[in-house]
Length: 225
Image (cartoon, rainbow, N blue to C red; front, side, top):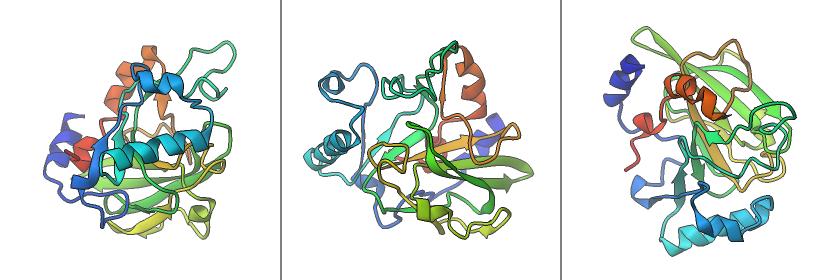
């Protein structure tokens, strides 16, 4: 992973949503179990959660709320995707979330090709998802874009070349996007493990060491201050 980090250090001006929004209009947000405000909110209600995000952005004169890498969250307790019977609970988020209105354009982080795409329809899952494949200095890795609009999958073809900054999708709305407040789940994956159209974005504490190596912090690439 150190090679990936070194590669990312030299990359500049990487954005994955609406390129017209400067990073000065981004604000960090805490959606972890330690955020006491969330205990007063019905986090299973996507509309209520969207209102919470909108109020937070307005209060901070911001346009995008971001964060969540390796954050321990209660957001996933409602879903059997993360709490299947006889399996360990998954509640540690291993991507970066960018919270902004549905319909916002989603951009390719870097030059690459479409590796796969799929509508992951279970409650609390990604909904429409695109995975891109990249290669830099002979190092192959992948980026995942989740919680998209259904239209984002129309006319997509595996292997299509995409340029950095090109619009590849738009953000979806609930319930299509997994039934969340609108946002982009952006994740870097080194070993895709033969998966297509899907890859875990939340893990259990026992698997955190593996995913810390396989899914480095996306902000190493984005460099949001």
